[in-house]
Image (cartoon, rainbow, N blue to C red; front, side, top):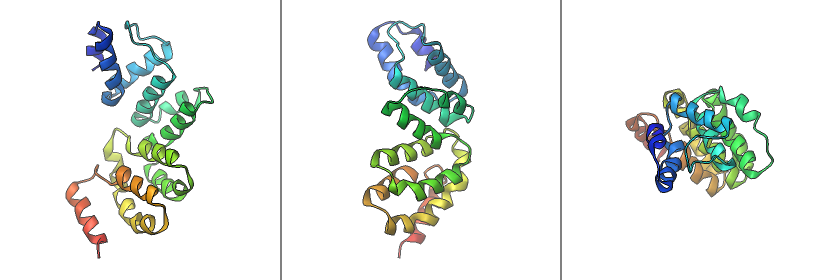
Length: 182
């Protein structure tokens, strides 16, 4: 994707690739190229500027790839909502401590705003290496009835939409859901 962007010439073509780049940059070289451009303040590509919003799209992709992103993200200044919610998202996107972060979502998430809930759950599931999330599959089911019976409808909807372990084997997921049904 980065190579196609580098060869783009028309403003519309650059915009097309720019919009999709952070979604499809799922390998280390592509993400690091984006981070390098962001830190340099320029891509060297005509029609491709990096503003605050796009910087946070890059930082979110970086956090979902590696814990090494933490120092860069922590050092990013700003008081805007983009920065506040970007840092919150990244805190849950880092690949380490996924089980601990899952339990934090259960414990702290219901008291958060809907927007904060979306950011912590969106960050948690964004982790690129889904293998490290496999140990968390049972946490979803172990906590499902508690979430169903003790949280708001909005939190439950996000819990089901974001955290259902589709990163695990689907047959196992379906069997676990059947076990929960009366």
